[in-house]
Length: 385
Image (cartoon, rainbow, N blue to C red; front, top):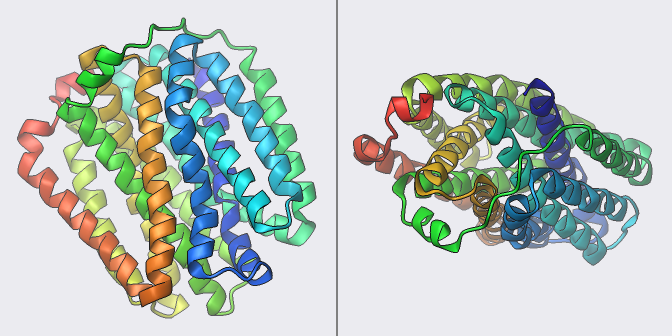
């Protein structure tokens, strides 16, 4: 179990690191490729579009072929995407490489988490998920550091090294015994999409990824406009990564003991506050701490979202691989809409409007949780076993 958890943490860490490595490079691409904020948002959103396309096939592969084969397929696509990003020098090749990276995520995440949950004791599910997600969010927030290094050393060197790392992870994956394949079930998928626990997890997943998408598009451009370079922007995301990496396992332990409601309420309350603060684009002295707090508030939502998806799937008999395939589609929808729409709205009306909309979505979600917590919250014994 421990070896598998370390492997899953490594796989999702590298995956999300590649996703977020664009952050400090985005101002450079915006300048050299003459992109508007809408165009920058499209480049960020290409990863989400790929994950949307690859989500359900990745889930089906994890169920029918087994989690290990799904992870191996995702790692192969990840390596190709890294090479593409290393040597692309115009908008469409870069966007295609990002799209391919998103497709890879559909396979690696569905396979990795289905594999992990098949091995995890029920009374440690929240903690195990929180630990893996801490690694994932650390990757997402450490990615800008990689982007900053690429800005200094060159994309070819850095992203070629990451492609080689995908090969190393593939060899490691082959060393661990996989859980058996499961039979995909369309009827179980239909039941899951009518299950309030499962749908609650899907909604939280979409919201969290949307919030991160808006932040990853607008915050680097705001800091760049204030004179911050790629290295400084990467440092901000690294500090935020450290904060969120600590929070996710804590949220998992709280979830195991108290259910999902408390961590969700706290995270949504924080997300409302920081989104409003970011909307008014204060000076970097205030803006940077808000970015760091936003990473923590947004990222904590992923842990209960995963737990609810896993619990809802188990209740209706949906294979976990298929459940996480739907999860990938939910994440991708937010990762696609957040940057693309957020960038376009910011281009037309300024950064105030997209962040105010984000705050409104969080407030609406918080109100829904407060109203429905008794009916929607799984019993503590359900999540703890």
